[in-house]
Amino acid sequence: MYWVTLIIVGLLVGWAVKSWLAQEKTLKGEPWIRFIATIIGAWLGDVILGDWGWMLAGYNVIAGIIGSFVLGWIWTAVGVEETASSTTAR
Image (cartoon, rainbow, N blue to C red):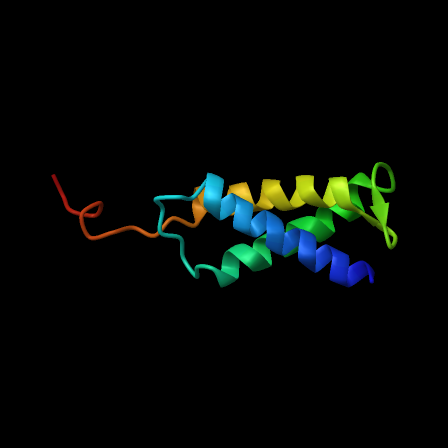
């Protein structure tokens, strides 16, 4: 049940990151890389921030949301694909 909760948190935060942070951006590997990044962030958030807050099946949901959002935000910042118009010399 731990992994199911972790994956659900990662996928929901991945959807939220796309809706709020990356509305007009084209990211590399969309949507799979974003979902992988947010799932890894959900796991890292639980591991690094420990057992406090809302625990569900041994998983810290609040810490998972924080970690997932941070990694999703980082991916949104660095994973932007360059378009032909942005690579043109001036």
